[in-house]
Image (tube, rainbow, N blue to C red):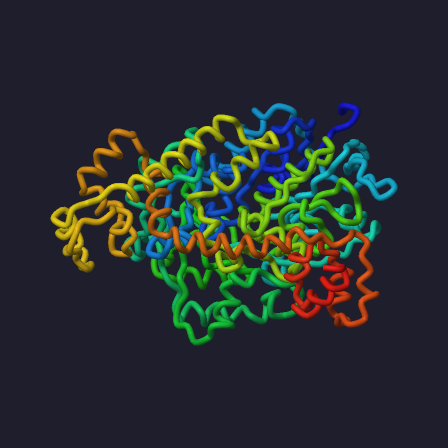
Amino acid sequence: MFQEEYDVIVVGAGHAGSEAAAAAANMGSKTLLVTMSLQNIAQMSCNPAMGGIAKGQIVREIDALGGYSGIISDKTAIQFKMLNKSKGPAMWSPRVQSDRMRFAEEWRLMLERTPNLDFYQEMVKGLIIENGKIKGIKTSLGVEIRSKAVVLTNGTFLNGLIHIGEKQFGGGRAGESAAYGITEDLVKAGFESGRMKTGTPPRVDGRSLDYSKMNEEKGDAKPDKFSYSDETKPLAIQKSCYMTYTSLGVHDILREGFDRSPMFNGRIKSLGPRYCPSIEDKINRFADKERHQLFVEPEGWDTVEVYVNGFSTSLPEDIQFKALRSVAGFEKVKFFRPGYAIEYDYFPPTQLKHTLETKLVEGLYFAGQINGTTGYEEAASQGLMAGINAHLKVHEKAPLILKRDEAYIGVLIDDLITKGTEEPYRMFTSRAEYRTLLRQDNADFRLTPMSYEIGLASEKRLRRMEHKLKESEKMVNFFKETSISMAEMNPILEAKESALVTQSDKMFKIFSRPQIDLEDMMKFDKVKEYVEQNDLDQEILEQAEIQVKYSGYIEKERNNADKLTRLEDVKIPENFDYNKIKSMSIEAKQKLSHIRPVTISQASRISGVSPSDISVLLIYMGR
């Protein structure tokens, strides 16, 4: 039925599983993707959107590494926005509204076109573990499939339990059954497991809404895109979203159902995402707020289904319906389906190495919500890294581990395995100490050469990145070397209320001023001629502008990162006995023995380990 043995088996075909399978197969591993439903590959279970604050940077990093999320997001987008444009470029975050059905379809077609990739539809019920090594999987029909590595990307399906008011039933998401057996096998093998919850809003019929009572939210006038490749183009036309608000009346109706809410009557014991609270949680925690924003998001170009972002709930369906009918524009709303909460098993990620391989079972990798994260982008990036590292391990090559100053993906994985998480982990720009280095515009500079080196990013991708780097550096040098006269400069400076100059000066100095932007510089004939002669596109121009305006900040952050990188080079022996160190705190000994950090730098980031504990450790290691 199956070939003798696969290199990599990926269990689950959500965002993490799809990226993992694509990466392993594209790098040359014989790969099998097993899922309970081939119709639901890369399903957008929650909101129909990709990207956002910090998440947009992750999608660009996935693309720079040769993953598919950026390309598919571009191909199936219905609206594009660059968020935080009023702030510095370290905060700029791309986001697209997606066509939900086309997104899943495009992912499936992309995977079907991927060489080395086989598919199988069935529930995985157990794992084959022999002498501490993974040897394959067992399905619900009793089929055993052997492999050298297994990547688990089970999302919310492991012992999933759906709650709507007093009702509860097993399920991995609406209309799909939960998965049983894997948790029990892992616990038997010595893994620690926990429970988490997440929620989703009702889906409604767009034909029943009155958009004239809402604020229209349009996409960018000049939309950009996610992928650095030339496979995709920015949107020519876009679809609008809308915004409306709850009210005190809506809040009163919602409170009527609190005694029947699984969140308040104790039936849900697990923690949900702090930064994406349910509507009942919001009105309970922020009782002083008279209203909350609701974003009304179309689910695609042609469908009438609408996602009510901001109204995530597990209240009884009659309360959900009554409350939404009191929202402006929703007076005649018709439901497609009510909102619900879901509880599922996860495994504290401190049980993983930086490669996402488990410490307990060799060749077994975890990616996505099984590690306690929330969000498509966080899941997809872990899937990509697990797929890459599973392939590299099977072929006896060095792993790919991204550092905190190299990628948001590096920050995400390091946070998970060093600090663990007791609530669904979501990425924010504030989690990255080097966000000036980790911008969305330079992910290709940071990551494409690494990916090309391991055989994932194509040579075409590498050459395109090198061209962009070379041309943007040349343009920065042009600004440094080219002078501009006082007569040419002062009218522009005056219009921008910037201090006038008394002599000619280099363009770089003028361009560095906060009030002056690229549009102003393009008014100079010398700049216009340079751009036309070199046929420079918007990406190169934007990159040059960032390098000119933020060069001081970038250099300072790079120096800080380099200083801390030295601690990354100080390795801790694998079986180091922390209990021998008498002058170290008991908490530090316990945390270090449990997490087993690989470097001094990683040890210093563990909560409960103080700088004095690190000093003692360095002395004990003879540094």
